[in-house]
Length: 113
Image (tube, rainbow, N blue to C red; front, top):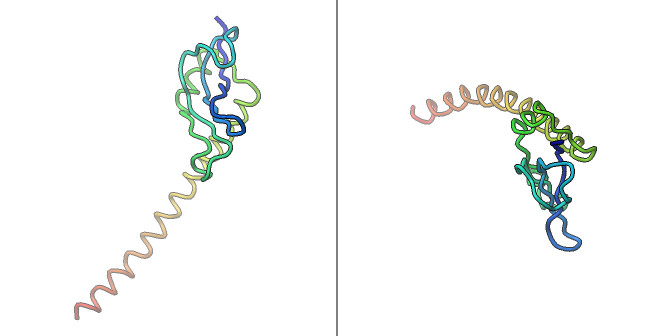
């Protein structure tokens, strides 16, 4: 049984919505699947809603032999890139919050006095 990670098209005309799924290679495009791995909505209102993937499950299926299609592979790369950018931004926000905390404490003591 050859497994593929590919997109299933859903949604209305001119308003596409895709599911990233694991399926047998011989199954129809929008047919039977094994597991839903995420969603892709190219016309989403917010960029954060455009791509939602379960990267840990994708890694599992790739480890047991599932091959992503070219489009699925590019979306997976994009999701990993976005996740790493978010993780890089999070520590910077924490450092900024820690730097602002003593200043806020100093202001509180001034107002109490």
